[in-house]
Amino acid sequence: MQGEASAEPSGPQLACPSCGAPVPLVSAALPYAVCGHCQTLILREGDELKAIGKSAVLPFDVSPIQIGTRGTADGQRFEVIGRVRWGWTDGSWNEWLLQVGAGTAWLGEAMGLYVLVTEAPELLETPLGNQFASGTEIPLGATLVVSGAHFTATDIKQAHSLGGEGQLPFPCPADWTMTNVDFRSEAGGALSLQRDADGVSAWLGRYVTLDELKPVGLRKIVGWQVPTALAATGIS
Image (cartoon, rainbow, N blue to C red):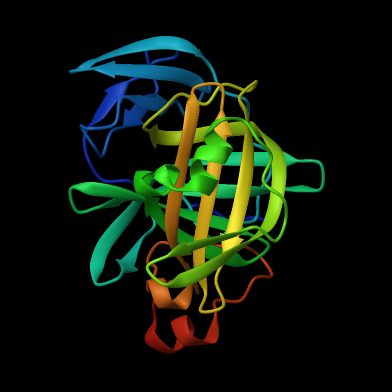
């Protein structure tokens, strides 16, 4: 069971064009947002907000991360400003959008595991990337070598959007579907290839632990204990 939310996103707020609720806007570079009150998909054009559709209502989730959570990744401060939740036949996972300096990164979260990635379009120029972009299936066990590291395809699934929140670089309608291929290296590196109706993308990074991110403003969840390393520092 979730407790009360405790983090508040920084930045200015504009009124939702559908219901008038405040919509926090942390990054001026991101064109889309989802109203947390009525789930309206919003396109931002300067200081004007335009309703362009509806996002699905996000299902109940017990993640300790929430919009407004802050932390540190690879020596840089970040703030969680958006989320897309994906579903597939055997479960679901979160992809949290992080504002990191002047750029962004994504923090994937599934079954207590976390992976931090940034876009790596150069991977689409590899033979395997070209194969994926052409629509050809990639088999489990396929390998991709990046800077001497061998990544192996460990998970392939068809996923659909369960909804979104906060600011996003793209809209997230409820009928949005994609093919997702996850690769992993022996050293804990992570690589993902994603394909949907609008094109393909590639993402590269590594698995991280929650305490490694030194998070502040985690969601309070009844019955969930703050990890020992975080509790010892007073971070929550």
